[in-house]
Length: 279
Length: 228
Image (cartoon, rainbow over all chains, first blue to last red):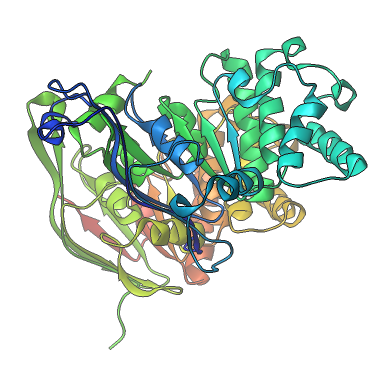
């Protein structure tokens, strides 16, 4: 676990709005707001730092609007940061700053090295394509070209994610909520990514379906040792999967540590509130 | 001069309760202790005084407020656990330091065998080898084979505690932290646990246990320390 880092985020920031000279002074976790009352700018993520080791699962928790998903979207290269760096490296090789990639390079990187699963399946899937079509889309973007290999890979992923392979040609609206999350996971894993990003993936699912999706992710992480970044507002989900956790509030990381430490010895007032609010 | 495996110097731990007007409590104040390879140190004292907090500081579930916890690691040399990087702590938990809490806290959908084998899987051991070792341990712990595929959360308190202890011992850590290991065990099972501790000690494992069982567990410890 002291292994090489695969992702290092340094001073990553993103705001939405015109900004004014007082913005930063008037926002932040101590004031309990991320929107500047003077100019209306939202400081979604401010100077975030984190590091992920290969094979590690890192949890990011915080209430709605704390900046978790903005941070994830920047790492997914779907949102360009205002400042900061996202360093990535393969197997201890030379680091690359992903914020410097052009659009083509970013798209290729996203489709080969990253996978993402959203809370809402319609964000991760093309609802008019079959399961096979959705996985093929990801693989074609990752520059796979052989139809037979793409089809075989899809069937293999359906088995891995506990989906009936005979439903390869069915469209997403014919699947249940839990199955749709598994279709998203299959699509995200298609190109054997180095990093899997999970954005509130069990929110809105009933408890038994949640458990099954989490068990699947645990098994995949166990078998493939895939690195995961898990965003959730549910401390129970994070406890099950992540061994380190970051706590965000109003766009800032207010605390980071081992998950058992965050849950049993929280230091920041907001983390104490969050832990005491857990059901 | 050789160092003990673990040496705690002036350890203090305070909690600031922000939700109760920032009230501060300090259960651990200026603690000094050490344990050598193969030694069993038993800590006792009245309930709620902070014995478990010492174990949790060593395991870094709690972040010490001040002081040092020097550990002689195979992989990292002599390091201060109170300041070591999280990645180092996670590595030590996998390979060198084990912790058995008072209560078993596991997923309800995982079998007793897999629950027990989890520390071996984490070490990278293949499933078949890990499960062969796991089955031996389940037998040694006196868990009926009929229960091996059931969740340990459906077990009796004593059986759960045996699984909990098995998880701590199976990875063969160099330092083992045991919180009330013989509480809720019958006399026969208590003897099994004492024998497990003796075998682990003979293999060089240092043990720090927190217990009120001075007559049973305490009689077998190399040293007892009263926490006041």
